[in-house]
Length: 186
Image 1 (cartoon, one colour):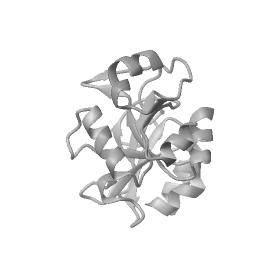
Image 2 (cartoon, rainbow, N blue to C red):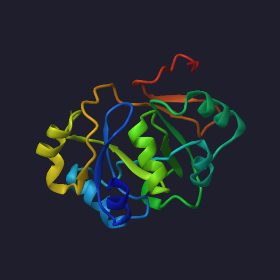
Image 3 (spheres, one colour):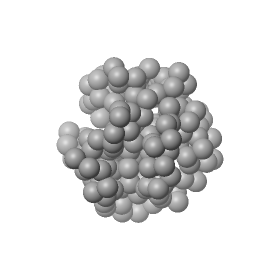
Image 4 (tube, helix red, strand yellow):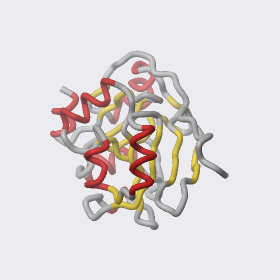
């Protein structure tokens, strides 16, 4: 049902291994615009994409050997990796540096959804004005007016994902979160 909602251009809330996410299909401009409105985001706020596994990432991001080794070690897991974007990535997802954030969450519901949908899913935290929602009831109360479906997997209460930039000459921590980043030298 969630994959069908995405296929129809809908917006869903879904669990990840860190927090609930809000998303739609990567090519659904209207739905993406709705996400920006629902969450009161500025247009320069970057969104990430969820892929079902490593094999899909190379279609949307340039994956150098070192980056691949790192991602193979840590994915699926609580990380968002920033990589140089390929032309397959819609411009709305790219920073001015032409990069894209990629996630492969280690959550069975998210992975099953991504496999069933068979294309990347937009990923942004189920949050509003700095308040993060980790249960479907809270998501429904605060964001439900703009969502087409909430995929209820119960309470998900973990820190947000660690964000690691792999687009440069060496890994850089952008945000420390649920994923261990001690392997990155400062």
